[in-house]
Image 1 (cartoon, protein in one colour):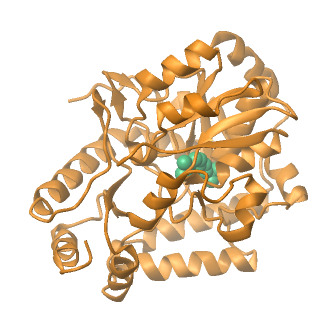
Image 2: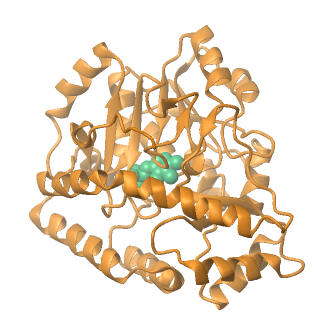
Length: 375
Ligand SMILES: *Cc1c(COP(=O)(O)O)cnc(C)c1O
């Protein structure tokens, strides 16, 4: 049994409306400014470049490893310039990045590392918990993340000087309006009550429809929505929301056990089907936030999953999810610049690993993946 070193109140000390708001605060306190570059991986979420661009910097994308979902250390070394002021290292689906090689590169160039722990609260690398390797790390509590409170994010700091700056910076943040707090809470409750894997597709459709109507709390700010951004990036997590978060985090050990046992079941049940799993570095002990597989016919699998009402997620479907087409240029992503990330988007599907996954769901996945031609 793992012994948890993390205390739930470590996650409410610096807590924000969203993960990206915390990331922007870290970058600002690291001194990242207009005209600087911040390196991040392609095969990421639009929240990351949104935060980078909010502080005035330019996102530079690094390709992912062959057969993996995390940053390629060799490509990282190539994309660093004199303008690079920070490196964001993502642990996709909870799989640790190849930290030894990445930290070698960042150490040589003396560039601070920020760990994107949006998908992980408990995975370890060589016995040490993720989020403890960089100068700082940030977390997210959106749908699809390991611990869900609707929206929300936290920051943890591993550097004394940075910590002092973050503390001073935190005083400029305000709580959301009471009306918004109520709306967030109702959405959180609705999801907690209604959600189960067979409702995945209708809930997803509803969520996107509400987001488009401006009723719900969509996780995607279209590039250029400056007024909304200014307010969002000055908003912290409310005190009430912090109470929920601490409560949820006290259940983390159970979430970890469930993720381990569901992932083990997928591994053994799907073992007979020739499916490619993303690579993990030596020394990784991965607690998956979702269970990823590469498939030959992703579109066919998603279509079948929707038809049979089986939860199956497509993210990331684009190198800067969910941004696609000409809008990618607005977040500084040049199509073709990270070919392995683009290829992974065409092949990745992910399965849930939480307590509502039961044996009949696993059986359905076995049938789905076993169907000829799709994998
Ligand atoms: C979800 C996510 C974030 C942050 O999302 P917020 O909506 O800002 O909380 C950051 N990075 C990755 C990789 C994510 O998946």
